[in-house]
Image 1 (tube, one colour):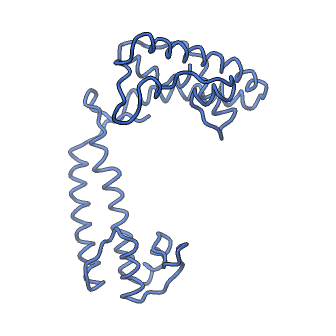
Image 2 (cartoon, rainbow, N blue to C red):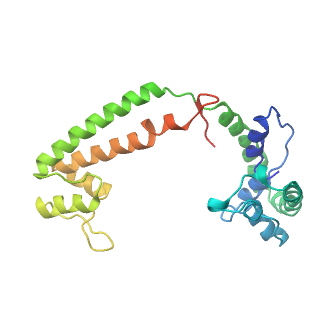
Image 3 (tube, helix red, strand yellow):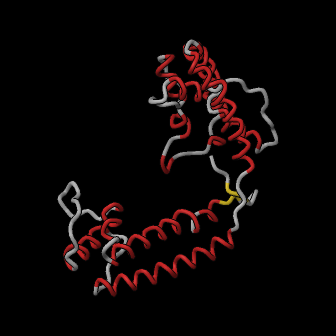
Length: 240
């Protein structure tokens, strides 16, 4: 198969447990030629010098895209059969080349394939999270961020956007006259993490900005986002 792990999830949704899968062309390609694309379309072009029906050919794209279930049966059958046949042909061309290099064969057979099966189980099981606790933590982070903003405004002597590198630069280097440590490609004073860390050792405002940035990242990436990623059918977050 090609990216079998994905297919096992789809089939498991319908009560079918796939067993005995031996080879995955996506992983063969990843081990043999990691720097190149690994989609079946790319593999077929590279190893078979042919192009089949693409998903876009079948379903369209953008606002006009239709679901696969709406595709004409005859075209859907041709696409599916072609996918299976091209996957087998890619395997027949790629695997012997991979098997001819003992180190690569070891990585594919003894690491990538077993890990793929393990990852499938991890993804299927999912991660249980405490949405109520995360919501509470989001509120606490928001409160602390408001406090940091007020402290920053007081030190700067005026309100400004703590998420704007341009405004931070104007306050730190224009209004407060802090030393410029390095410049961006356009010649403006840099306000990246490294610069702020260095300035924070001697000045209070960069320290507030750094803490605000780290809390904003925690809130935006985890405490706000994770509850939205819970699968309603299982109550868990499923990675892929």
